[in-house]
Length: 137
Length: 137
DNA sequence: CCAATACTTGCACCATGACGCAAGCACGCA
DNA sequence: TGCGTGCTTGCGTCATGGTGCAAGTATTGG
Image 1: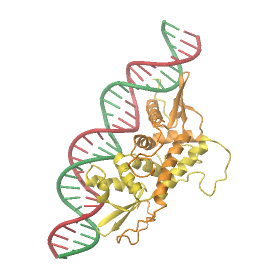
Image 2 (image 1 turned 180 degrees about the vertical axis):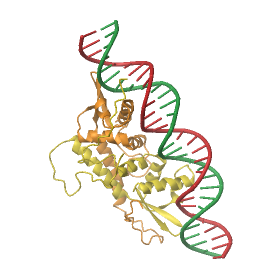
Image 3 (image 1 turned 30 degrees about the vertical axis):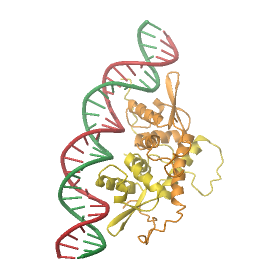
């Protein structure tokens, strides 16, 4: 019995850093962690025009319905925007929003790596604000 | 990191972006997509000193061995560095490397979002603003 | 050398998620 | 108003991955 040392509560870090465990960030990473979704996004990054499901389905060797589900996941994660246009649904890459999110994390990590006391933060964030109040058990 | 992406791949688009579907990027996102690993990282971001497994295990309500496995995943993804020190193994957050990776992606996304050289969207487009602030219904 | 500490790994279990098929819903058009 | 197109969703199946327990490895101290 040398192990089984558990903590009854996950001590999250201080609130000064981006909460990597927040629901939105986790959803973002989870959405980005699938090869087929990555293929879809790579296609959209290459050409930022809105894309229909049929169009995007041609880049993955999976069923049409699967692509639709993947797009829903990406939309749910805030990576894509969806808009109905007639019979079709066009998905748009929310590049700026995702880039901003990634950059906030990068800034926080850099702030950790080089603790240079230089807070001239030009309006842009210094730390990530918790976007949604996420509660944990 | 084990791979160094320097120049863009020939024959496939401009120096547009790191391939979202690349093995290393996928591994990075997959590693970041778990709540317990996020808790570990949040703890390390809060204090960038090297941490032992025992230390980090106290932030997750899971078994000690599970934390060890999570740390291996994070090390495998290039997020952590590991170094044996006597009886213990200290894990170090590779903040700068991860931040650079995230920033590369952010840059690629912004390059996609901002320029929009001249895609006149023939006829189909009307009110196509991706600025629909719907996060989740 | 043996024992204790600190961590890793093998194994089994189970929850989650990706997948394909088929049915269902939404919209435009004849 | 029916019909076809375009996309979503329900359901069953299967693979992946997170988890706990127990056993194994590495290193230090007595």
